[in-house]
Structures are given as C-alpha cells and as structure tokens.
Image (cartoon, rainbow, N blue to C red):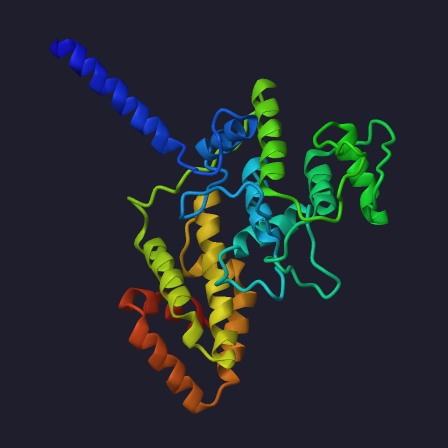
Length: 317
C-alpha cells in the first residue's frame, strides 16, 4: 500500500511540474502552436507575460524580434555604432546593436531604430530571408497588396513554405505579424537545424558566482543608473549615456568572449565613448558638475562610483 501511495505521489508531482513548465492560460499545449511555444520556451528563446498568458495573437516589436533572431541564429558581434534613439540604458540596446552588425535589420531614413514599432508580415519576410539565406524557388501570386520592395522577400518565404497564403490567396503583407506566426516559423527552423545535426545556440544565463570584482561592480553600476535614469537632466544624460554604453559593451565582451575587463581594456576599446562622456562633462558649468556629482553620490554605491570615475570620468590618458 505504501509503495502504491508513493508511486501515486510521484506521478502527481510529475504532473504538477509539467503543468508548471507550461503555464500559459491562452495556449493549448496539445496543438501545433502549443508544442512550438513549449519548444522555444524550453530553449530559453521566448517567454510569456507576467499574467501567465502568451498572447499568441499579439504583435511583436522590432526590439523583441531582434532578441529572438539573435538568440536563434547565434548572432553576438556588436556594431561599433548603434542608433541615435537607442541609448545604453534601454533594455534592447545590445539586441539592436548586434542586429545592426548582423545586417538583417537597419534603421529608418533618419537613422533611428524605433524599437517599439510593430513588425509587419512583409518586414518579417525580409528579415527571415536575410537570416536564412532564402532564394525564391518559384513565382508566387498574391491576391492583395504587397509593397514593391518586399515582394522578393514574400515570394522567397512563401515558395519555401515557411508561411502560407490565406484561402483567398491573400497574404496581408502590410498587417502586423503575430507572435504565433513568428513562433511557428522559428520553431520549424530550429527543429530542422537539429534534425540536420547542426548546432542550435541555446542561450544560457551567465554564471555570476565567481565573477571578478570589477565585473560585479559594472553590473551593479548599470543596474543602479538604469533605476534612477529619469532623475538626470538632458545635459547630464549626455555624460551618463556613453558611460553606460561602454559598460554594457564591456560586460558583453566579458560574457561572450571572456575578455579581461580593466582600465586598459576600456581605454583601448571604448576611447571614443570615454571622450564623449568627458567632453559632455566639460561642457557643463560648475553648478552642473556639483549637481551631477551629488546625484551620483546620493544614489550609487561606493564600488559603482569608483567604476564610473576610474573607468570613464578620470580615464584621461
């Protein structure tokens, strides 16, 4: 009897854990979409919302898509320059700069990234065609409107059966793409790569247990400045932004390539950002200097203040 009871408890526990692993209230796990969502969630590529939903019919922004694409395709290298509207304190800074270097997405005519803009179906086709290296296998007829620039990309995606037309022959190219459609395409791609024996990059959380003191301080500095970012004036942000940008890039170099980060490394790799911060600081008057230093002293820990000062503000070789 005890053995039976023990077995029942184990089975119940396994059931509970499986339900916890897939807790989206608006996605049915037994469907193809549910399986695709579960597959990408398990790989750490995509997640849901705080309310326990996945919102499959919701839209996806340029910033969110860049994060997914970078993870799926393993893009890591960062462009030397970013976008004027993506400052280092924004959560998607690294994803946008990596996407720019990878070349699958660019800015608008004014150079901006506009990360919060939704991605249309034809824009998604362009990105997928570039990242997967697709070619048009045969000519495709679409019954509704497609932007002239996007037609080659839409044809490539449709002819490779990565997406399909509606029953009436339309594609709704200019409508925003849904999270469900993005998941389906990316999950199918990752599945195909695994079946072909190709390595698929699965993101892993960095091990922070034995990090050097300066790396811990850099992480803390970024977090503390981001938390109080709104208290800075536009003039002060001209000093703060290049500092945070440099710290994020240094942290990325450490996590991705194992770079040893010290003052010499910062100076060698991010001198332009150092000069940018110093010039902005020098352009402020004495009262501005006092006010900025007071804000930093009141809100940052001693170790993060030292990183900011030693690595950027006083690095005047």
